Length: 230
Image (tube, rainbow, N blue to C red; front, side, top):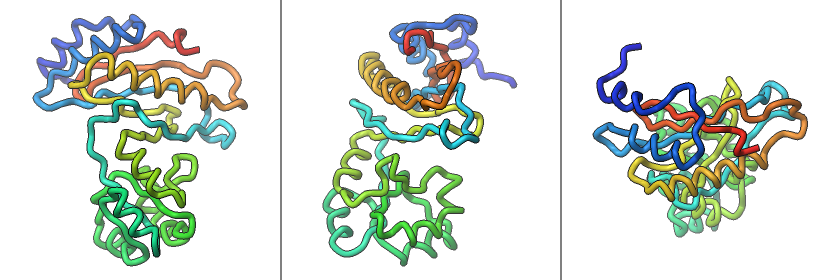
């Protein structure tokens, strides 16, 4: 794959064979973010889990202390008083059954996170084929199926992120923007890693963290020393 001049230049300062400690990795990844926009810094965590087994699945959510740097649009499925509560808490869209055809037939997806009260999951379940593949289905483990919609919305707006294994047993999550200070990125990253380590499945035998890499949207990745997290 042919890389651009900026990517090639940024990659020169990173030793692909090395594993860096967190402070140096964050410093390098910030310098590698040379695009004209404020790049997202992402963590890519390759695990030794086998997601095909339910007892080795990882899924949860954590609030990053400095947020993600991105404004998040929240859709809430609720009814009655909970609709007003959701609006008062700052939800971008609220509704119920009337939203189903809009999403299913019209392809409306102007939201980043979906929250639902438990009594609406029968309705939301009909959107599984649309929301599921995009990672948008509400889930109790992620705190997005709840009667406390105010708390859910506040946490999401404050920088709550969801983490889960993809099909190759890797977790991909944002930890902030290139414009964040090194201290802010380090705080966010440590908060994420604490949650990931705590989420280690008890059924897993062998190595949990195979590799941890930080990378900007358009730049090269920087590998971290995983021994520091075990």
